[in-house]
Image (cartoon, rainbow, N blue to C red):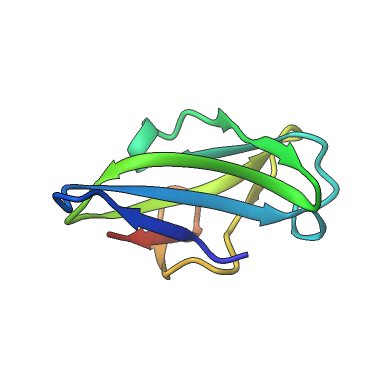
Length: 99
């Protein structure tokens, strides 16, 4: 499922819907979202029919790196991210949402 984005009337904030289908979650029963917007502290996502989801309001005019984290500690990328950026810390690509 792609990222959903809805700009505020003054276009300074964007409500971003992050979602990952259950089949892409590597069998996880719990999924978390971690990124630059929350200091890479994994935030729990809600499990809904067919996958996991979480909405956040983020300031516009920036790009934010993020990844999904399973309860087992596996870090997953979003297959529908706006783009990807290499992270030397993780020695892997991070997903990016562009606002």
